[in-house]
Length: 311
Image (cartoon, rainbow, N blue to C red; front, side, top):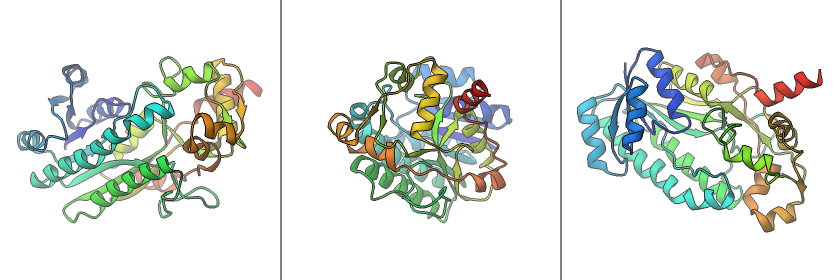
C-alpha cells in the first residue's frame, strides 16, 4: 500500500512515518521545508516540499505519487503552549485543517485514493455522565476558543466522512505526550511551565483529560488503514481529573506542587478557555478502538511512576 501523509513532520507525523515504514508500506510525506524533507528521507520515506494551501502544488504531488491512502495530520500549533500563542495560531490552524485539508482531499479523490484518515479531537466532548463514546456530540457550546476549535474538527470530520468517494476515518486523539510534544520532559513547553509553577490547577480541577502517547497514536493510525471506516477515540486507559494528573506530572518532573488558583483569577490572567479545560473537560472511552483497531495504549507514565513510588 502506498500511503501519503500530509503534516508529516509534526508531533504525530514523525512517529507515524516511522511506524508506516516499519509496517513495510510505501510512504510519502509532504512537508514545507528542506529540513523536514531530509528528516523524512532519513526515516525511509519519500519527501515532497509543498504548501497544502497551494491547490496546484498539491495536485502535482498526487499526480506523481498516486497514493492508495492519505493520512491528514495537518495542524499549525505554536512551540509555546500558552493562551496567547494558541490564540495567535488559531487562524493558520483553521486554514491548514479546512482549506489545506480540502485541497488534499480533493486531490486524493482525483487520483483514486480511497482510504482517507483525518485527525480529530478526543478531548472536546460535550458534558455528560461517564466517559464519552464516539456516538456522543462534541462541545460546540463550550467557551469561545474551544467552541471554535470544535467547529473546525466537526467540519473536518463531516468533509471526510460524508464523501461517497472515500473510505473515511476520523481519529479522535487525546492530548499527545511523549517525544516532541508539549509534555516532553526534556523540551516540552508545558513541562517547563510546570517546573516554573506557571501551569496551575484552576478551581476544582475536575476537568477530565484524556491523553495518548504519540507512538501509541501512530500505531492506531497505521491500524486504521485496514479497519472499518468511521470514528474512533484514540485515547489511553487513564482519563483523569486535572488535579490528579497535574499533581502527578509535577512529581514525575521533580517539580514543586502546582499552584491552585480561583476561577476568577484564571479568567483575569488566562481567559475562559483555561477554566473550561480545568473544570469542564470530559474524558473519552477507547473501547471501540480497542475492539476494531487492536489498540493497546500504555499506561500514562506519570500516573504509573507516581503509583509505583507510593507503593
